[in-house]
Amino acid sequence: MTKSNDLIERIEAQGTIFGHPKGLYLLFFTEMWERFSYYGMRGLLTLYMIKMWSQNGLGIAEDKASLIYGFFTGFVYFTPIIGGMIADRYIGQRKAITIGGITMFLGQLVLFAMHSHLGLGIGLVLLILGNGMFKPNISTMVGQLYREGDDKRDSAFSIFYMGINLGAFLAPLIAGTLAEEWFAVKAASGEIISYGFKYGFLAAAVGMALGQVVFNLYASKYLLEIGTAPAKTEPTTSQNADNTTTPAGLSKIEKQRITVIVILTFFVIFFWAGFEQAGSSMTIYTDKYIDRNLFGWVIPTTYFQSVNPLFIVALGPLFAWFWTSKYGKKLSTPIKMSLGMILLGIGFLFMLMATYGVQTQGAGDQEVVMKKAALIWLVMTYFFHTVGELCLSPVGLSVVTKLAPIKLASMLMGVWMLSSFAANIIGGFIAAYVEQLGAATIFVSIAVFVIALGILKALQQLLGTLL
Image 1: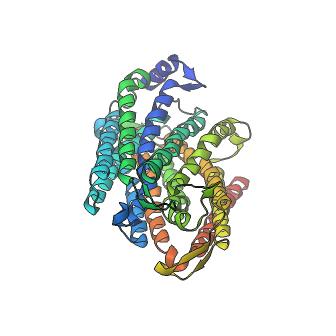
Image 2 (image 1 turned 60 degrees about the vertical axis):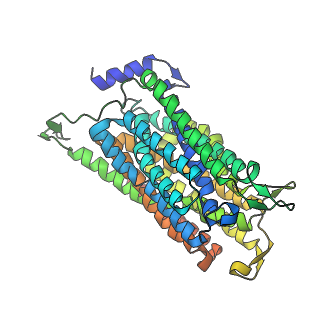
């Protein structure tokens, strides 16, 4: 019996919850609070930048704010490849998660304490660095709870993804309530005169601290030795498919698997470039042009960042079940991801419909909105984006843990996240051109492109299977 199998047996001996190891739910809880922290801050970030100084914002122009948002969210997904390498080679995943969590906690505190462009820069840099240590390592540890070839892995990542999105659901509601309701100053008309952004950042810091405390208290009990040491690199030979051995390094099969990860990483760039418009162009559009009045109450703009994770929490169990059903097993990873791309595009067609319901007079600073778009178009957009995300993202996380050689597991999880690095920067540039090209042009262009790409990828897979 190998050491890894012995460890898995001891994990399984602790008992399961809904058929999964208890350690999965510790990682679920830890990731939930980290995502609460991140999405609480992210839900406020664009508004914080574009609102005037007198409103407790930073007075940054919308196009520049979109670029800052894009580069920030992009580098959040660039640093994981560095954090993954550090964990794989030097400190192990558990220490990396703790270092990353503390660094992100400090970043949120800076945003809370320093209302300035300098404070914004320092806070965002700390969040980028901390996320690089945290993100790839906790995702990799989920895969290590299961035996190689265990078909419950896709299901496990769907459950883990629910944890991500439970935190993402709660965060904008709490941070948004603090910023736009409890600590906001409003005129008699209900218009916000000044925002309480810093209290939303403080709530994000508290959430980050809570997740770290629980993780460090219970990791040894439920994860045993998983993630405590760097990946093993001692073997001096590796075995190829033809049973021959080569000097220590990567076998032919391992190299082929890494190539697959890189190809899938490139493919999903286009999904995330569209999906991440939710935090930039769609947030600005919602704030200006969506009728947020519901039975006399104006829904805070930040609350809409919770719609996508709410759908994921609601639909996650269904997808976790479906992937292990006889029908779900028939769908290959490329087909699942192609469906995700197509559904994203359909979502943007609903945003296109929203633009037809808006009536304005004037332009630029002189623009007056005469009629806003119906709320249902935005909700339908988020619904289709969510279903697309569930077809693509947790499945992608799962396949990386299946294919990645153990000694490069965290680094290759970081490679996977490079898709979001490139996508968020591209998405930032796309959002920056909304004012020049018009929202309708941007939304329909994204829709047509990603639907076409999804169809082409699906056809490639189907033809390859037939041939």
